[in-house]
Image (cartoon, rainbow, N blue to C red):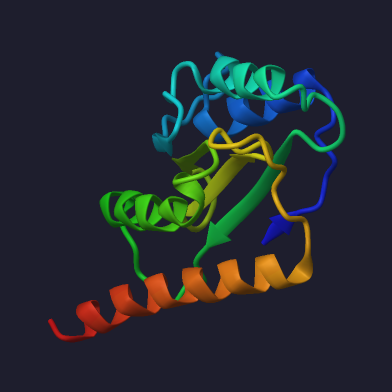
Length: 153
């Protein structure tokens, strides 16, 4: 699921990173987390540095998407972390991306935050339906591979 919010201010970005990584004191649930291109503890600051370096501090600063699993799909937190790294790798060679595996609802879900400014060349993330369709297809393939392995045991 793509969360279609604007995230146009640094406070929006800071709050989103805090939610995904569960770094607010009021969050009672710990989460496993990971990243590409930024440390999990310093993700917000590092994303802002990239945006400032390229002078891209306006418009949408982050993309937020969530991968969740239906009740019939068994997944434990360790496997969810492995899947999250594989999913994040899709954008991780060009964009800072972080994730947290959340277990505080009826099923495990993985929210991701993507810096819309590429750390490679400062280009903005392509905001178009084709890009999201390709990404969704990639995610489905990663999850299907996991299901196939699970079915062999």
